[in-house]
Amino acid sequence: MNIKNNITTIAAIAAVVSLATTGFIAYALNTDKNEIKTIKSPAASVTEPATEAATATVNIPKATGRKLETAVSSSSATKDDIYHIMLNSIDYYDKVSGTVYFPANDTCNKIEFQTVLSESKAFFRHTQYNADMSKSVSMDAVDSMADTNDIIYDTEMYCDGESSCISVDNTEKTYASNPGYVITLDSVLDIPDDERITMESDGNPCYNLRTNPTNVPEASISLFPQEMTFGFLKNKELWDIEGIEKYDGKECYHITGKTEEEYGNKLNVSKFDFMVDVNTGVLLQYMGYDEIGNISDYMYTDGISFEDSAENVKAFSENLITSYKCMD
Amino acid sequence: MKSKLKKFVSGAMIALTLSVNTLSIPASAYSATRTIDNDSIASGYGNTNGGNAYSYLKANSLYNGDARIASSSKSSCSYYWKYPSMGANATSCRCTIKVYLNHANFTDPSAAYYVQLSNTQSNRVGYLNQEKAPAGWISVAKTLSPLPEGSYYTSKHAFVEPSGTKGKNTGADAIQVLLSS
View 1: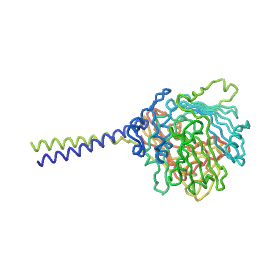
View 2 (view 1 turned 90 degrees about the vertical axis):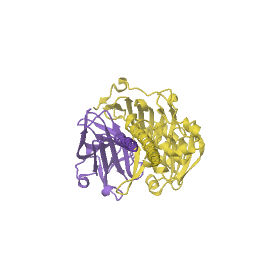
View 3 (view 1 turned 45 degrees about the horizontal axis):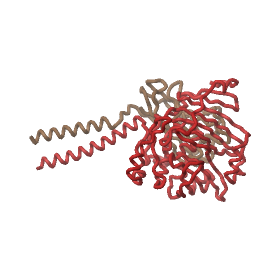
View 4 (view 1 turned 120 degrees about the vertical axis):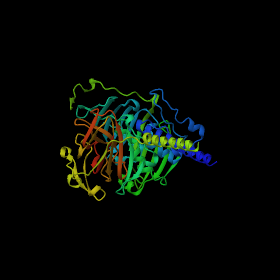
């Protein structure tokens, strides 16, 4: 009887250890291989019905064949779900194209891009226009400024899947290769939600970002908005989900909120307004308002398209730089 | 019978424990960290102010009260943090950088951070939106395989490269570089 009890106890312990080991090994192997995360967020697991959770990992776009995460149903998404998807948006799309606009003092930046994460192929053109932000009291005014032809900066970057990319400066008429520039998808590490913000020994917070494999740095404000997600959404008491609205033909979470004092002072933004694509966590529009309600900061997008709808990545051609000077 | 069973069970447990220890804990043959502040006085290391583009900045919010700042339009002018050599014989490595950002004038929308991994090549670990980052340390990491030199890596500096955007500023304060394999 005693032996039986001992065996039962030991068997139970062994089973628990074995299960924990399997899970731990699976996690370790997953981490080591840097595979794309296939585990739903804890919040999503709790709120989603089993049938929806079961389909969550079956999202394989024809264009690339890479297995993608599927977002939780927008009708039941929690703040934690939105926070999670925005911090991990690169798991929800592979091929994307479009245009992103954001300001820099009295100028407007325009980023036209195409990228395929699984192939490390990307193209972007970054142009900057003179634009007087003091007149930007409405979205229309911002729109009209971005249409100006007064270009002060014009660069392009071509990444064809190799480690080196070619940058072209149309303003200076120069070009150069950039070794070590590409960030591949398999170099991206997963970070559990509860390890995204940690405390350092000096008492300061540390915000842990996943590196960005879009290879379109200037569009990360939209495509992989980790910094803004931390800055605006980490305090979940300060924002609300107003509802689901369309932006540029896509279903979006309409989020409104107030900024924390330190972050708001830094950006001169008291209140903000987000439009977040429900399927990918991509930030399609951001409006920041100062204390008296004027637009003091913004980012908006045009024609963001995913997977089969996205444009192909523009390829580099020697013809583009025939009269340009090589800077290598 | 009782003793045989006990031996079998304890043997199985030892085997299980060993398998846990050997399989679940990835081997980490090498790990080293360097923390470097801007300017040599604070960090003890000799940094490089690329193109002499980075002016000196003082503020209580900054790490040790000071930092360097340059126009983000100067994309060819990088700020280099230099440190005693790190490196190992390996075919892959994990690079982590932690950057201290806490000043309203650090506004580069995509400052690129590189870590030197061979005598001829540095690799981009990631890029950060300095303007939209909340105050504190910002960490970004990547794994690298294959390495530029194939079977080893060696590192003596990291640097930040401004994005090229006009009307913004790139900040360079303290940085921590961690390499492991």
